[in-house]
Image 1 (cartoon, helix red, strand yellow):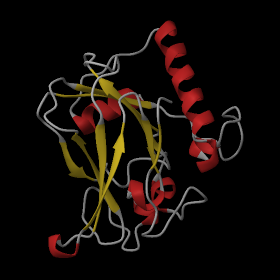
Image 2 (spheres, one colour):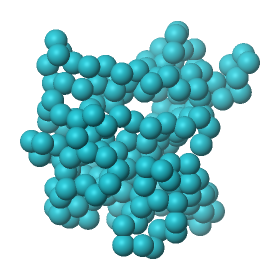
Image 3 (spheres, helix red, strand yellow):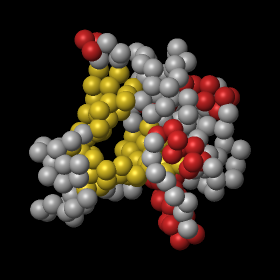
Image 4 (cartoon, helix red, strand yellow):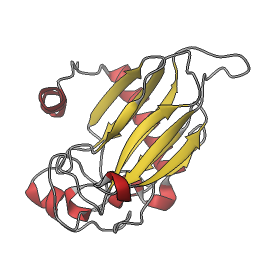
Length: 206
């Protein structure tokens, strides 16, 4: 059901996972939980059965072709629970690096261009990064309680730029958890960040 909802919302084609692929996805989820345990991602590294646990149920695969980038944006602000995790790598190896070319996570704060703050987070291929709190830009952490992709000055947008004249495509895998109901997306966040100063956390080769 979650895959069907995301397909309608994002216009993506999705298929159900067989047991082998589902198990591989659980291994990726477990690794991300362990690496980002200090952030409390999805309730932490413990098994996802506690009261604060969040189980990712939406998978997005993205390909950015050579010489292109992902413009800064909000993920739908009232659609996801706390914590969005992405693992990215290049489609082909490059000279001296089997995982391909480096990229930068571009974070921007401020609705007006003249007042906008930009932070570039350089990351080697094979890195993972997590967005929480104001870096995720969810409705529950927005002082104006904005929904959808409405802009504000208190939450960060995110995008991706490839380092230098990227000669190969970038692939990424993103895990999210759909908000169950209105209280999930509109309530105050517990842990994991809030306020306009939160910035993304990243790990090389999670």
